[in-house]
Image (tube, rainbow, N blue to C red):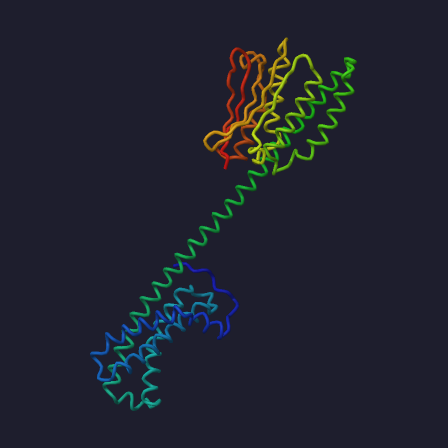
Length: 356
């Protein structure tokens, strides 16, 4: 039995008495003392009340000795050993005190009375055995409680560390994705400026307005599906100004799903991927459809484009890899990201996650 090192601070007598004589402990002690008195009464010539009073006195002293030894600062002995020794020594000492009270402190009278001596040995022996057994039971229970408390403490600490690690990974993935999106958007504006397009100024104004709305939400851990849908719509409006004859889009989601937590920039990554790898490479352009729906307790968010499709498009780089990792960190292993062919040509990206 390994017990924690005792504190160097020794509690006062009042605190020890309060800890020892808790109501439930007193009730248990009285019950055990009563059972011992009933077992010993047939071999005593005195009344049951007299035997009961002695066993109660001894039980109270054993209880106090066990508690005092548990708080006594001993660095050279384990606490549980000190408590067992205290109970073992207190049994004969407490019995001696009980019998000295009976004879008024007259030791000679006690030693000359054969009945008192035999009674002393009976009560002392039974108190010693019962006291040690009860002390062992209490110590075992205390060790079990301490082990479970330590296990819960370790589990809580491990959970906190895992959460901190996931938060750090999520911030790292955000840092990788956000510049990627912003630089690509600025590159689109640069192309319009270099080509002398009259749409350059309106597009730049739309970009500034978009960034004013989007930048505050980039690192927002409380972002919702509604805010993400709004950002996607603003982005697609920006892209349609860049290529008005080649891009059409629709964004649709139920109002009841707008408040669901959703990783910021996750849906925007798929939409940007659809523009760059689906619509841009296509000579005729295409249409992008963004939707959200609820099915059997789970939510599906999809981005469908009628661009060149999966077979003809280039690899999307680290964007989708990072997105899968962000979804796993945000929603757990239940979240899924699927990339599906959309006949006759095009691609459909689906994010599925539990609503709860």
